[in-house]
Length: 346
Image (cartoon, rainbow, N blue to C red):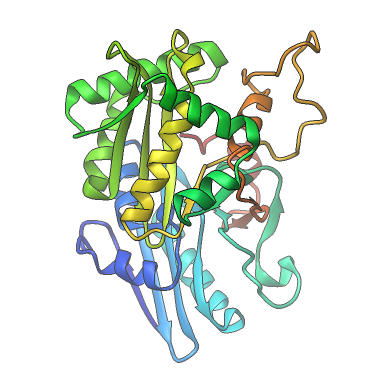
């Protein structure tokens, strides 16, 4: 089988993304995602295996920790063909690139089951608890507007219509500094309200810069022109993904965040996408959506994602669970240290 291992600099064309899209690969395996992450502490390498048995593609991101590194394959690899043949060849090349990068292990977070024959041990990997990306998500089929609205929970549909009645306006903005700063203020408001962390301002600006016309920056404004909510979505292949967003505490009662998602779905559909990924819900359904005093619906705060679960599942669609993360150990003794020190993050 033929193999190409190319650094982001030596394979800067769109050929990788075109091939990846043709075989149903995920956006986090795209060249642009790799180059985006390179701006924020990672080193990206891409491996392409081709032959009569099919195609295998893996973008490996490396994060250094002193003299060593850890590799990470987010939502990959992508195999189109016979995995019994493709996986051993791809694994060999993953090992080769790992040695070149002094990696002690490679974490694999598949978009779907690898379907390799035999046991995980025979496949050369071990199961690893937890996920770095969300372990479950909600995927919406982008049919016509009537179908999208009809599959929503009654309360979500009510809030979409409430936003219309209250004059909420959705506007698309070019990713200029002022617009990115406005989005960031909304995200800071949400992060403070819900007690979770966000990236730096430059992180979101770099994402929009890298994805260009394949990303959209939308804002919801109330009748006095104030910003009520904002989001960034991006498309790859036939799918769009809700990547980042935030909302104003002051204007939460206007239903703006609900209408904003509907408009993002319309943008995705108009650009040829068939599905819209709402990007992450809790691994398990909450036993109750009630708040601590049992008289109100729970919000989202810290590790308590009940409000987020209610918001995203309320749009209907399919709940998708991702396979467990896998670990390919290159140095038998050291991976436990990398896990305990949380080398992979961000």
